Length: 146
Image 1 (cartoon, one colour):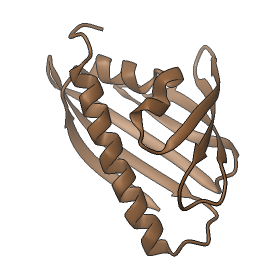
Image 2 (cartoon, helix red, strand yellow; image 1 turned 45 degrees about the vertical axis):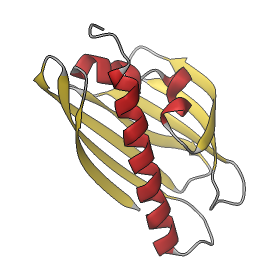
Image 3 (tube, helix red, strand yellow; image 1 turned 180 degrees about the vertical axis):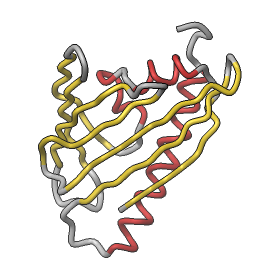
Image 4 (cartoon, helix red, strand yellow; image 1 turned 90 degrees about the vertical axis):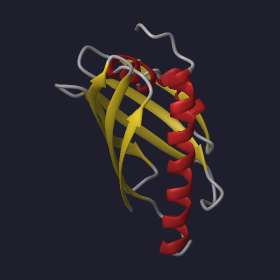
């Protein structure tokens, strides 16, 4: 499953990056139930381990990701372990003005499921719409300076 979105977010790029890298609170940005069990901040990357419980998946799925800040703005996550076949997510960020950011989101995810592809696609689209809505609401409630 591939997904791509371009958004205008109601905060500076530094605040958007700060919210997206607050891994301890990251599950609050999603409607899907997930729990963060490990955050290991290293010099050049952050390793996260979380469990995702999803209605179309038979059990909780483990996802270990390597998260990196991108030069020029944004972040990337690549799966380095877990129960998914593949998981890659990229946020690219560009300031529009001091209080708005253009964000380009790309996701590539492969998971073992018996659900038909059309159902998985419909569910991913619904989940991403909810994620973007929650992210925008979270950003609106952030202080204006990082």
